[in-house]
Image (cartoon, rainbow, N blue to C red):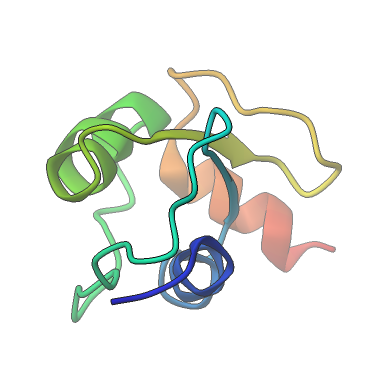
Length: 89
């Protein structure tokens, strides 16, 4: 089991982008680990990633995928583009 900060850190390390998990005031100290061996496909959109990877493992938790400048990425943003933005910073 992992804390919110640990899950955010693990997603950043594997997926190549930062997320902000929104707890809505709920104490989420024991989330399942972000347990994937490989990063999501580059062709995924943010909406695809949320549906296939995040919502499946954390059904009652909300997440924002962030651009390097801290803005929230739109659901149609392609993961490959988002990763490239992070690599450029």
